[in-house]
Structure formats: C-alpha cells, structure tokens
Amino acid sequence: MTADGMIAFLRQYADDRLDSWLMDERRSLPLSLISHLGSEGLFGLRVDRRYGGRELSHTDTFRVIRQAAAIDPNLAVLLAVHNSLGIPPVRDYADEETKQRVLPTLATGRGLVTVASSEPGMGSNVVRGMATTAIRQADRSFIVNGKKSWISLGAASSHITVLARLQEPNGRRRGITAFLLPTSTPGFRPRSEAMTIGLRAVPQDHITLDNMRLPPSAVLGAEGGGAALAQNSFRMGRAFLAASGTGAMQRCIQLAERFAGRRGISTGRLLDNGVTQRILADCAAATRTVEALVFSLAERLDRGGPVPDEFFFACKVIGCELAGQVVDQCVQLMGARGFVDTDIVGKYFRDFRVLRIFEGATEAMSVFVGTRIVRDLESFHTTMVKTFGATKLESDLMAGLHDLVERAGSGLTPQQGHVLARAVGDVACWGVTAAAIAETAENSHGDLDVYAAYWAARQLEQRLASARNELRPAFALSANVLARHIAEYADSIGDTQQSYGGERRAVDAFLHRDPA
Image 1 (cartoon, rainbow, N blue to C red):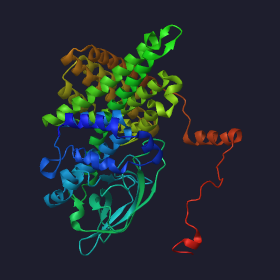
Image 2: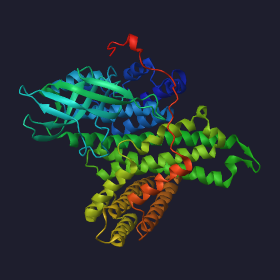
Image 3: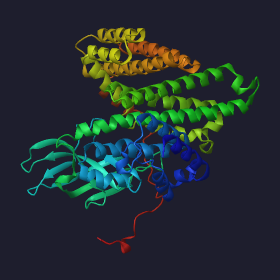
Image 4: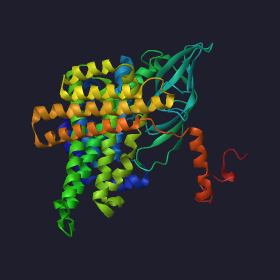
C-alpha cells in the first residue's frame, strides 16, 4: 500500500472504528487496532519490502505520521515509537539471519518493538549514569541486570533493544552495548506502568532485568557501539515527533477556526475579530514553519546526502515547542470549550505536552547544541552555508551568535556556561528553522509560506534579543539560597501528603502464594 492509501485508510478507520475516549479511559489500545494497522503496513513504514515492509520514503513516512497525529496522539506515538525507535536498530544493525527472522514479524504488526535506554537515575545523556550491566560469561553469553524506566510500549512489545554497560568477567568495561531480545526472555520483568496525564493508551513502563542470560547473537552492531546506535534512533525519533506535531497543530487550528466561524460575540463572529485573525494567522505560520523544517529534512534524507545534526535538534527544540504553543493558543481561543476533554483540543493539550520532554527535554537539547556551537562557531557557520547558502539570514544569525559569545566573555562559572549554552542552542535551532521556511518560501512563493518566513525571521530576531537579555550581568540566587527560601513555603502552605486508604489492589495475605 502507498502512503496515500495508508492516509485514506487512517481517515476511514478513524471515522468508523476508532474511539479515542475509550482508549483514554481504559489506558489501553483496542485489541483489534494492532492487527488492523499491521495489515495495512503501518508498522513497516521504513522496512524493505523483502522483509514485509512498505519501504516508504522519509517524506511519505512523515505524511503518514502527520495524519495519524491529526486523528489521535496515541495512534501517532504508537507508530512513531515502533517505526522510529524500535525498527532502526534491527534494520540497520542486526545480522541478516536476525533480520529475516524478526523484521517480517515487526513490519506486519505481529509484534511491536521498542528501545530500553532510560533508567531511574539517568537524564538525557545515554552514556552518563547508565547502571544496567551486561557481564560476559565464560561461554561468551551475557548476564544482564538493571532497571529501565519510561519505556514506551515496554510491556506491550514482543522485542526490545536493551542498552547496557558491557563488562568482562575481570570487571573491564567495554562501553555501552545494544542487545536485541524477545520480551519472553526469562528475567525480563515489567514492573509497573506510569500513570501519565496524557497519552494514556501508550504505556510508559518500568522494567526490571533480572539475571537475563543472552546469547552472543543478541548483540546489535559492534560491542561498545550502543551509544551511537541509540543516538541514530533518537535523532530520527525527534523528527518523527516534529512530524506528529504538525498533525496536531493542523487539527487544533482546524477546530479552533471552525469554532471561531460559528461563535458569535458582541462585534459579530469571533473569526471576524482582528485579534482572533492574528492568533490564527500566527498559529498557521508556526505550523507551516515546522512543516517546512520537517519536510526539508525528509527531502534531504531521501536524496541520500548527509543531514546536519542541527536539523534534528531543531525539529525537537523548535518543532515540539511550537506544537505546544499552538495547541495552547487553540485551547485559549475556544474558551471554556477548549477546557472540555470531549471537545478534542483539550485532549491534545494533555497528550502532546510530553513532546517537550520525549527524546530529551527542550532545555537539555538546547544546552547540548549550544555547548557544541560555542566550542566551534565556525563549524556551525560552515554547516549553515553548505545547507542553505550564504544568505542574509545566515549572516545575521552568525553575527548574533558571535555577539552572544562575546557578551558572555571568558571565565564563566558552570552555571553561567549553562545559560550561555542554552541561549546559543535555542538561537541556533531557530536559525535552522527560519532558514528552512525561507528556502521553502523562495521556491513556492505561496502566500502562507511567505508570511511564515516573515514570521519565523521575526521570531529569530526576538529570540536573539531575549538571549542578549539573559546574558546581562544580574544578581542570581544560588542553589542553597533557593532551597532555603523554597523550604519556607511550608510555613505558608504546609507540605501535605495524602494517605487516605483509597482502592485496595493487593492480593489478600490468605490468598498470596508466599504468605510470609
């Protein structure tokens, strides 16, 4: 089936078979959903046809994800996790025997796949803080122990790629290594599901890996190459998130405009109000800007050339932030109806709040990008010129970044360095985004594209001005002073912790297998 066929199927399926409210209330996906999506090829979007996949281009893949997000965020995240995080490690790093054995199952929806990277004490950096270990045994097998948290589809998947620190029997470390395993492997224990405020039908699981014995063939790619494998999946995951954001933005604007066209106020229709028109115009500009970024990235990937990391980070930082802002604006525009769960837009507000957190929180991504650029401004300059040409926007962007670094000066404290890196990273991501929509507008000359390019350029200017403000010398509160003042809140509001009985979910002691 083609991408157009998949999109038509999703629209018809949404009308006839999907009930988002039941999925939300039951915190689960319908039993029939996986098989129906699988039969239409939606779990093998980027899998070769010889393994049962559809082998779509990146452009068509993002079109399908955009459509899914415009129907239900749970549907989009289900497809995104499986296709962008779960499939690539198997498709790109497994040996041929494993591909032939596993990919046909995954591509047709007879099994789901995900990645287990995050841990209770770990942040956005895959390498730092990972405590899960894989210790090589005398027979060359591995014993894996550890805990994984916030694993999308963790308990629902048939296969999972686990990242662990590889150690020799003598304790020598060999680096982060990826292992592909069936979730039926003894010792793989789903422990609990996080009670998330949104995306309730897509489980976020906490998993214990208890003395799992894995054969040498379970290793994906090179030993010690797990961090690079994970980053390759995560960078594509960030693009998928931005693509899903465009679907959510378009759907919410569609509903907000419909409401404004029918809602009467004292001056006439809400839609005829100048403030309303400005809000919707800016929302449409933001949406078109992210769309241009996502599909510019997709076209470059489809041409087979190298795509700068900054594209993927811009998708995450700017794409996901703008998605949140547009959804919030639509909630506000719809007034009380925006706050009602059954009026659709409010549910998007809950479900897509996590876009700013998934695949690395916005702040962490901005600091990471900014740190790299501060260390080598000229490399970023070269990247921008190679990607978009020597334009006025590029020239102004680089002048602004140089100015930020010069204003910050040298001898920064670690905290000041963090602030500088975030400011530079945010501005750089805006620069990539504004350049992408400017390029699109120059080629299309469409009225919305031209307006979006103007809008994005103004956003970049404003972000530069804001960044300069952030870097001004200012009195700052230390962590200790902040902690002391926040501790005083207990005097004004207390510090309550509910302990009322609530529902009993434990098995009675007389019925428990282990009565002690």
